[in-house]
Amino acid sequence: MKILVQVSKWEAMAASPSRLVHRVRGGYAVFNTKEDYRKFMEGKK
Image 1 (cartoon, rainbow, N blue to C red):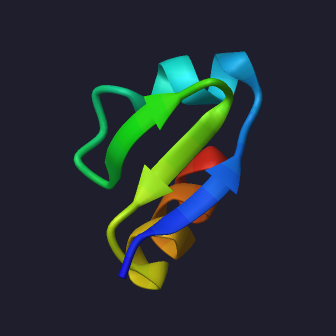
Image 2: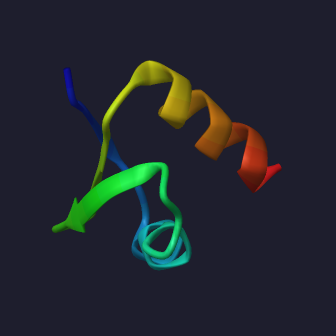
């Protein structure tokens, strides 16, 4: 199951090297799991 989340361009650029993000395209980040998304959100704080 993949999770598509709308993120800002800057967030997407920051997330690109992250293993949590499957891919980023057109302002959306694709996460493999909800857990990955949760970790990403926690990492932004």
